[in-house]
Image (tube, rainbow, N blue to C red; front, top):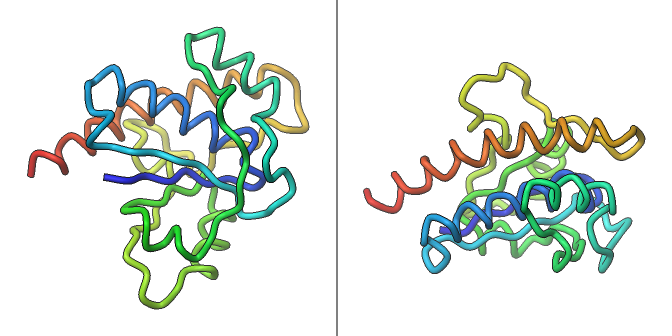
Length: 157
């Protein structure tokens, strides 16, 4: 199973989701069965590492994002991945517009997997303070646990 996480510039929300989920996948012993990546709908930060505030918030909880680098979503992603998860409804709309007619990937909102929230969008912490990055990390951790359970179910089916 291949999962792609997508936000705007691929330096805050989507690399946080990728890093946290990848860590959980590795801890579950599923690193060969589930692969992950992240990308942005825009190419503002191609080649850049995640925002230092994302890295700091993640590191405080034992997640390492430092090896990740921003990239832009490509048409090929819609064929290479099984599931593409948008961090907010704007990303979902952008992805739907980019999606080739013969695409095989499923498109969903990331928070559709959250076990209890009614919120649909992971808020963009970029223009705020450190508390926004902590809030994103809280949402990402809870959603990633549920997403992992979903993925395990798909793999065993």
